[in-house]
Length: 424
Image (cartoon, rainbow, N blue to C red):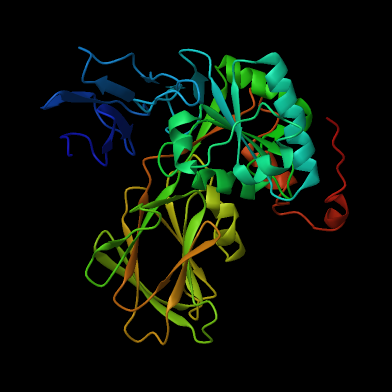
């Protein structure tokens, strides 16, 4: 969709059960401009204003737009009730930045929580038991769901917990998620929600905890604030990855055409002893030919993961972008590239390549790519709403320094790891 006098304006309209969410991302100074476009029962309105951002939704059953900067929806019904519509909480945005400074507001109290823990870990198991017992006592109307493999060990201690054998039902039932573990636990939680993701509050009980703003000691206060609503949110961008065969047909995984990744997708030579030769196209235009161990396409969140180890830059999570990072390139001049978020990236094997490459998405091997097939990467319309603390004591900048030890000496850092005690 193009609009006059709105240079570099990107508008994307996403359809969720006959409801339209319109996102507007201004990248340059523009003049005030209003235009309405009617299409069937839906109306899209965009207002260009320097350093502003609008979120509006139009419901086909209503007669006008909802209030500016609010996406009003409803929470889900009680567990095991018939789910007719997919709904979620209100997300209210403070003008000025597309992916930060949101607030969560429930139209009615949440009814179902999913607790996800780090597997085979006694500390997170103790934390889960404490949180579940407290929730059951303080909020008896809230259903508590855990994963099947976790419930097998806890069903005797927590007889009131619920289990959904089909994890595909999570998006239809869960109102918010509590994660107990490290950054990998959030990645696992992201994989449980192939499209819309409910708000996630994360408690640090893992190795690093770069994505985890809450200390487990304050779980009562943190979860209570989520249930009451009006907490701060950071929408972490995801990427939509699809794999295409030689005939341009999409190869499905678990009946899904796209996989939405929180960190990155990487193409790596795997056990192949030879360097791989990969062709990279951006928006159907040839960009580069990479002779390296592989290539990484990451999100800003993923910029502190595999991409960082491969020499990529650290990108703030509010900077919407696609980061292309080579893995051990043969050419010394091949440096990481930061691409705009509306780019479409296609990666394929060059005909001269001596072997296949492994497609890895958020740490999981998905496919062995051969010549003639390609991987397509775009920004996902389904970000992850991560709950932040109300205070600014813990910020991204402090995490960069305290956890990653950015531009600091590593002397004595090893002694600081794994010396934390937790009481519940």
